[in-house]
Length: 310
Image (cartoon, rainbow, N blue to C red; front, top):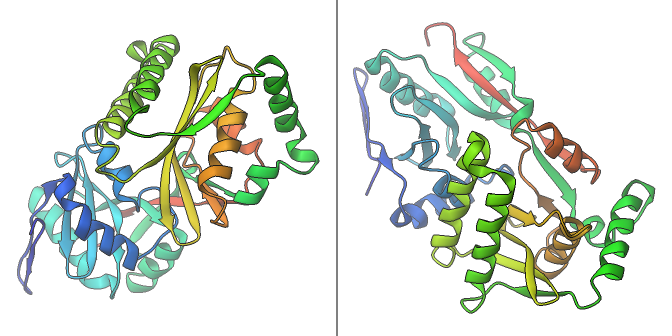
């Protein structure tokens, strides 16, 4: 098994390995047992971004430890069960051996309380607004009811008027390549090659297409006049929440983004009370767009840096 810890009072040896599809069963199990409603606590999220962020994983008893960039490591606060003290000490011993500080790049509020109770005044905790996840009521994303979402209804009505022959269908082995080609065309139009952030995202999207069925993803695509103009991919995050990993639409079709979101949620997420549409990565345009859907909550996240000996 990848990721085995040997721990004593003198030394802690953590064995990290690059995340692979073979890790999915045990990682899924630990993620499920330690259920957290954020994108970082999802196998697909870690897998498709593994090359961009140089992600590696290890197991410590009943906890999953995910590390970013081994040369300058930081960690997602471990998912799983059990006391936090042993796993934090193990990670700290690991980075001390490298001469590096202990940094958690993702710390949810529920884990912040546990960390501060276990290690009072040991960590500097700083909110990271760019990483907050946007969570919505699924029924509102479908109905788009209320004054705050009236503009979304207007966009969809315009789409209906301009595209009377539109259709929505689930992604299957027969049409996956249609969505893939649309994604590549979208990327060229958006200038992915000239934008580092978009380029990194395009690498993650390519991984989702390449391993779509192995990851167990659910997808849908939108057509107008027989042309694929939008697609979305997601999956169950936990029993209450569906997470949407990817959502793309051609800007030349007004209302296409609103349509793919509404149709996708209605088709695949209506049985979940909540929909997580992930973070905005600090992009102001994306932030405005996600706030305009009137989220029911934001999943707050912080970084935590060790500032005193444990």
